[in-house]
Amino acid sequence: MTDSENTLRRAVREAHARAESIPAPDFDRVMAAATARAGAARKRQYLFAGTAAVAAAVAIAFGLRAPMDDNRGYIDEYELLETTGWTAPSDSLLPSREFDIYQTVPVLIESTETYGGALL
Amino acid sequence: MRDSDVLENNPHISRSALEAIHGQVFGWALSRTDYDRSTAEDLVQQAYMELLSGKARFDNRSSLKTFVFSVVQNLARGRYRRIASRLRLLKGAASVEIEEAVQPVEPESNSPVWTAVQALPQRQRDIVELVFCRDMTIEAASSVMGVSTGTGRVHYDRAKKALKAKLGSPGERFDD
Image (cartoon, rainbow over all chains, first blue to last red; front, side, top):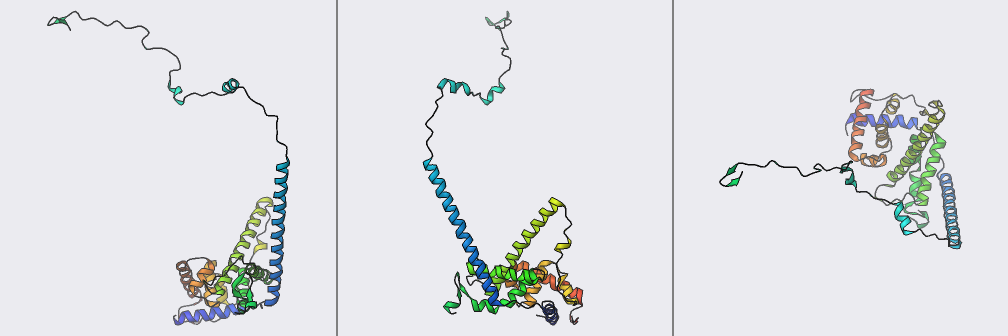
């Protein structure tokens, strides 16, 4: 550590000591208060855990005691099928108006010229 | 370490060891709470509560002082975060002018050295306080601040340079 750093450190220490002139509270008093707070916090935790456990037990008990709903309804198979539908995603690529490019078979022009005994 | 002296939920901490650093812990809490005595005392109480309940468990990986300082630092940070978020909510809801209420209370010292320290950015101020005034190594101070040792060194170096620039050239006395 350099001299200037030592000097700086000493100066800061002195200034800090002057600034921080507030005496610390008694250790035993602070510890006693902290112990009391820790105890209270623990009690709160136990209370919370107990309440949660009771609530869970009540919920389970009510859940078990709740009557099963026997009024079950059935839906007809065809009725069900009518309510659903499916189209292929590629259906949109199909022509919206149905037509064939060739409604009738086109008549091709026949060649009359021959070559080597066969029609060209 | 006597068995009766050991904290119930923190077997590596004794009351006597804690008592030995109590003054320093309170000093650190003071600087975390803008030198408000009652808030600092409350913060120390809360830190001891964490130690007593075992929420903050010391496992000898650092010195006790470093550990307890870290607990205080984290609690103070959490508290300020909560206060800041409440203030933001208040501001948003009622657009109340509350800046004056959160102005930090500076310690009563007219020392130009202390004024220069207080003018440093938060991290630099913290590392200067921990290393210069609380006799910590840069490694321990960085650990308390929750930054890497490299980052701590950078803050330390910048703080020293800033203080030297403000208070005088090297070799010059930095007296009041």
